[in-house]
Length: 337
Picture 1 (cartoon, rainbow, N blue to C red):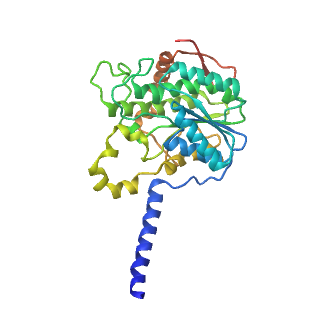
Picture 2 (cartoon, rainbow, N blue to C red):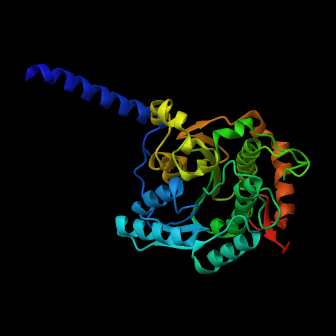
Picture 3 (cartoon, rainbow, N blue to C red):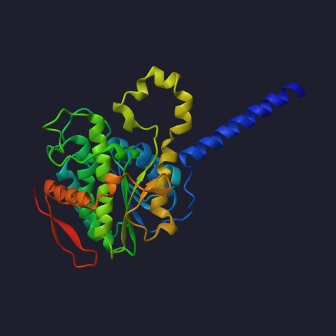
């Protein structure tokens, strides 16, 4: 009998070490135990994957959660699951289609009218490497949803957020931004041959540039803005890449994927950290890789490009800049496009 104990013990040690290694590689859980009772959180794309896990974790911490999603069937079901698991009644499903500027405006108007406050905005929703699709307003889908939809939504909720004692905007970007460039002459891929990977990288670079300029414009206010790379996660986001259906990926790269690819729960931890960590109060304009502050790619730090992207985005979504009554420069007001 004792002859079998050593191998079992060694196996247990090996498994334990592998789990610890994976936890270390993928960043682990949010170290902050802070709660957010009384705070309202808006999370886009919260019906599945990282967004759903973020909503669950923040509901556990006492937040009033507004899950903003396009698929209301999945959103209602996800909200019901979260309410059941957390025993919180403050979890709500709301319709938002980021591929429609009209929908974004209607959602923001409803939030501004019905909610007393918006303390945390997590721009989480995304599409990745989809075919050449266009949004309702004629924008390339990835640029339109990942950047322009969130750009408009954020601006429309800013005044409500400025009323809070402190508020946080969290833009979920990607490490893919390092391969991105902003082609101001052809943002919608109408002149050159469409490259779905390059289009995704452009949209993720736009997330970081938007965050940098937003943080500059919010200086002197009580609202902060930061962006993050959540890590590579096993979610529905990769459904257009073919990785989910690849036998090679499953058989040959399976062990490596297990080590490097996060579960949705672990991939949600950076968003949770930026939303609740007390030590991040007042921290703005930063980029986080998992839960560590890092320098983004050089092109993501170009202030002139960030300003130009802001002006261009405002024109595309029908925003005009007006002097703000509060400190922190200018804010954007709507005009119908």
